[in-house]
Structures are given as C-alpha cells and as structure tokens.
Amino acid sequence: MTIWHPTDDGHADLSSHDSFTAGAPHNTFARLRREDPLAWCDFPGAKGFWSVTRHADILALNREVEMLSSAHGIRLEDQTEEEVIARRTFQETDPPEHSRTRLLVAKAFSKPMVALFEEQIRALCREILDRALAQPEFCAVKQIARQLPMRMLGRILGTPDEDLDWLVARGDALIANTDAEFTTHVLDKADTEAYRLMPFRSPAGAELYDYAQRLMADKRARGDTSGVLHLITQPDMAGNVISDTEFRNFFCLLVAAGNDTTRYSIAAALHAFAHQDGLLAQLQGVPTAAPLWDTAADEFIRWASPAMYFRRTAMRDFELHGKTVRRGDKVAFWFVSGNRDETAFDQPMRVNLQRSPNRHLAFGQGGPHVCLGMWLARLEVRVLLQEFAARVRRVEPAGAHEFLRSNFVGGIKRLPLRFTLQ
Ligand code: HEM
Image (cartoon, rainbow, N blue to C red; front, top):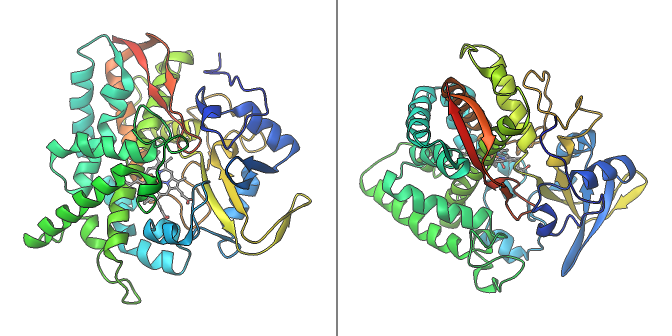
C-alpha cells in the first residue's frame, strides 16, 4: 500500500496556493518532468516564472550561482529592489558575500557541533512523548511534531522557554503567510502593502523585529557572547559587519526556517506510520547506533520535502531543453518534484527506510545555500523516531488530516492519530 495518492489532474497551477491544499500536486510534477521539464508558468498579477522539475536539472542549475542568483528574491512573488534589500539575509546574497557571512555561523551548525545536542534532544523527545502519549488519541502535529523543533530553537537562540509559543506562532505567521489559520494577513488575499519591507510581508515580521532587537540589547547588556546570534554580528573575513536590519532578518529566518520544516518532516513520518503497512515495525527493536536510523530520517525528509521550492533570478540568457531563459527571469527549483523523480529514485512514491544512496534535494543540496540546519534537522528527526518507536507499537488515523495552504512550505498541519503503546 502506498501512503497517499495525489489527486491533481496533472495540470495544477503551481502559482496557486490552492493547488497544494490536498498535498503537493505530484501528478502535475510527474507530467512536467516527462513532457516539459523547463515549464513556463503564468502567475496572475505578477511576472510568470520557469519551473525546473527534474532532479538532474535542479542539481546542475543550483551550482550555477553566477548565472542564477539568489540576490533578487527567493520566493515566487515579485519584489522591488527596495523590498529585497530591506528583507535580505545571507540567504538572499551570492558568493563571495554569501560565503563570508555564512562562515560566521557554519561551524555552530556543523555535524560535530550539532552532535553535542543529542542528549538534550533525547531528553526533550522523552518529555514530549511521555506527556503526549498519556492520551490514546490526539493531533500529532500539535502535541509532537511542533514541540521538538520549537524547544530546540529556544536553545539555539537563547530565548526563555515562556516565549517559545509566542515566537513559534509568529514564525508560523511568516512561513504560512498564505494560510488563514496562521495569519490575519493572507498574502494573496489581504492588502499587505504596509508590511512590504518586513520579512514575508507579514505583520508578524514587525513583532519579531522588536523582539530580536530587545533580545540582542539584553544580551549585550549582560556581556553574553554565546550562541549563533552573537556569532552572526561579528566581522566577517573581509571585516564587514551585517547591518541591524540584516541581523533582525537573520533572527526571523531562524525562527521561520528552524521550525516548520523539521515539524513537517516529523509529521510526514508519523502520517506514514499510520498509512504504510509495516513501516513502524521495521524500526522497532533496532539499536540506536544502527545505520537504519540515519537512512530512515533522510528518507522521511525526502518524502516530506517541506521546502518545496526556492527561486533564483537569471543573470544572463541561457538555453535549456530547447527553450531560452531570459536575463531577469524567475526560475523555481522544485525540490519537491526532484525528490519524486523516477530517474533518480526507485519507487519514489514509497517510503523505503533503507534507501541508500538517497540523493534527495530536500535541503537544497548541490548549491552554496544548502540548508544550514540540515544536521540539526536530521538529528531531531532521527532521535524523535527512535524514542517514538521505543514507545509506540501501532499508529492509526483518527480523522482526516489537512495540509497547509502554501506552494512554498509543504506539510500536514492537522494530523489526528490513535496510538497503541508497546
Ligand atoms: C527538515 C528540515 C529542513 C529542510 C527540509 C530545510 C530546507 C532548506 C532548503 C531547501 C534550503 C536551501 C535554500 C535555497 O536553496 O535558497 C535551506 C536553507 C537554509 N536553512 Fe533549512 N531546512 C530545514 C531545517 C532547518 C533548520 C533546523 C534550520 C536552522 C535552525 C535551517 C536554517 C536554514 C538557513 C539559515 C538556510 C539558508 C542557508 C544559506 O542561504 O546559506 N533549516 N533549508
């Protein structure tokens, strides 16, 4: 039994968030990979964009940083230069500037540094699961998947525990700015002009700006030089220091990026346990040092592909698949499609916990912007799965699940499940 069948007619409008409310339109992606791998997509009310859907093309183009720039916006929406500059983090810069800033925090997010968090993560997982599983039935996103990344984020940012719910709700309002459940200002429906210089054009961006400012002032007053927020304010190799605006944007980036994507990877795994026979059983009784845990975590992240696309802008004309991309055109790398590419993965619509090698693109592999938090995300997913499998024997659906309304971040936002303990 496969977990879930896409229901789109193969011609979904990729510019519309409504095309993603039943999950990613995988029939459309499959058709595009087959028939039109560099597809022009109209975007009502904005400039259209090119969609790159094949695994090999995404991997190759993601390396072409001089030809395809991140410095003019990384979402599909059009932005003025003023908006781009106001909302910029190092994610919206190109090498060598990008590399210099990223280097300031790269070590803190490296595999060996992140590994030091393992016992903390395990303790958090135990606490979260023991509390949640005291009930036989509940929303697994709310009680489990949302909890772990949120609490880890608090550790990384050095924020008080009592602020975490507020922070994560603001992070949701940024990332899920197209879903009315998470924001009062739905991007494609409300007038967001007043917030055009804020992250994600969101009023939550303004609140997070204030919070970041206060947090940093407080850290400085205490002479606290620990953590990534301090590192990012240090001079880079060329002696440049990021501006206050860039600092606040970096804070917002971590609040948003460090949360939802890991949450939706965990949610996808729990959903898969309830729908693909025998999946959870494969993990039961497996020693925590076994390689299966690493391959399983990566496979669930491939399966979830929560960061569905990132965009670039063409810096010169180029040809691909008989078409010409013009300078200034927007080009979307649909990682979610590359991760279901039949030419790169055997049976991509199945979860295969042993999949190895697993050359998925969920973290934007191949380019300089490859996810900064990937080792942390992998570790969180792996440890959560280990603690979950040690406690739960069986998972069943306890109601209908619901997906986020977004063509940018894909995920299950509501997941009622019933659990039978060991
Ligand atoms: C399963 C979880 C995650 C997924 C699927 C994911 C996905 C991605 C992807 C696809 C990119 C590349 C963006 C591009 O090409 O422009 C990226 C970049 C980034 N991610 Fe993640 N992410 C995850 C977790 C995290 C976490 C936990 C953090 C931080 C705590 C984080 C922080 C970042 C940052 C700062 C960047 C920008 C890197 C750069 O531009 O150099 N991510 N992520």
